[in-house]
Image (cartoon, rainbow, N blue to C red; front, side, top):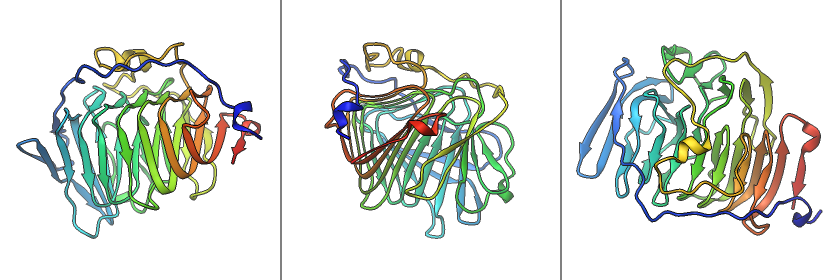
Length: 307
């Protein structure tokens, strides 16, 4: 089926002439053991809590101004670095994030990658506004206590526990190494920049609230389970208009609805999976390069494969 029969064309505007809010990176005083060393324009992130091949960090704030670097340090035994942001403010990231292993960043309040945002990550990269990153036995919670000793292996699901999850916007250049993957998930997800995973998989998912997303094997579709609505203490997820207030990124026009995935920038990968509780809205049929799957939650019948 031709792409033009499935993809919508929408006018969008993007203004990035002003800097994003400058944010710093600070450790949360919650016993996780994250240590931040600020040297010049670089935040060296070390310490944390290690369980098996997983290293956990907890941040009060996590943001970068243009030219700043978040440098996650780890020994070669670490496979996954997982960071949560507990302070209740959205992450405004306009600098470079670098790490050797797979990197997971969770902030339920919302995440924005500015026009100067970029990656230097040796493994896969995950950014999510979920409230939990869950493993076989237990979950890494966005706030409060996590039983780190039980968080072994790789994550198996995200928990979007609140009624409306926070938004996620990319206006930067998010690129990983060959055969690695990028996964962006939130209540509403907008790509205005570039996402590249040569030989890998790009997943962009707008998840309905009160659902758990099961992370299947590469090449398989995500699936959902209902959960009870939970208020996460101290964190108010920001919808797209609130998330963009005070930034230099202009609200798309016409207005984006909660649960939409909007593609107004390029995505290049061997496989591109787009999931939405609302609509999938590319502004041009040629923006997405790669074998593409479009899924509208919760109806599995809404699945479409684009070659």
